[in-house]
Amino acid sequence: LAVGAAMAPKPRVAMQFWDKLVVFKPPGWQIDDGDSASGEPLSKFLRQLLPPNRQSVLDDIHHGRGFLHRLDIPSSGLILVATSHKAYYLLLGQLAMGLIERDYAVLCHGFLPAHRNEIQARVHWYDDGPGSDAPSSVVQPGRPSRTRLKVQAHTALLDQALSLVVIRIGTGRKHQIRLHMAHVGHPTVSDKKYTAASTWSKDLEWCPRNFLHRYRLSFFDGHSGASAANTDESISDSVWGSFHEAVEPLPADLAAALPTVRLQRWQPRAWHECRGLQKSE
Image (cartoon, rainbow, N blue to C red):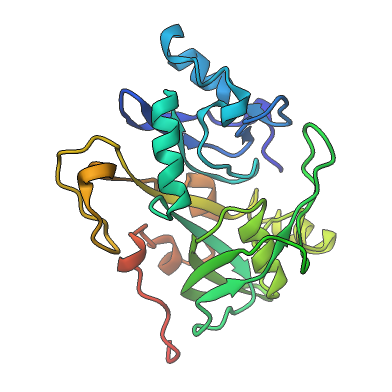
């Protein structure tokens, strides 16, 4: 039931500028920002899309082929891609300052307590060579990592307790969300890498792949002179330009896996508009 490269749906452009793109990455595709790829390389899609005179960054592995962030192969969601070196560095500056917002929808095991709104745990990952996808771990020598949470709903499927959670990451470590959720005892559904084999096998009976989707991405376009307003705080547009956001609803396979009609009606919203589950609910 795992989504493989041969059966993976195609990526598509969600938002386009002359020097950057927002691309929807389906499961099975890899952000191949280095020399090798174990999934279907997203750069292949971009080569077919962009004219040769806009592929200079795409050929540059020292600048990650223009990809500003990663998304695990079995996951889906929005990816920000620079198509010029100038745009790459402007977006990299925003990323370093926390101005690029990345929001996720996750279905996890157990009833995640409504009061839990953050996970802070150091993440360490291993580099076993090109194409490696070794699991990360929470250990003291790891890099500081922060995951913010808002529980949207508790539900159950047969004998399994489940929680629908929206997540915003303050850092972007390898497998951060999946590892952090497993670390606090609430692994994501259908996660082969961070759950027991028996749990993963049982999950696949009703959810075909890792239930993690980056549904919202926001950034500044880098063109000064137009007014811009961040949803969380006021930031001058003199440097960063106009504010933009892209939103991608749950793909059909994940929406169909939600176990109740109430959860299937969930709609993606900006972080500040998401109401967390109340203790009485």
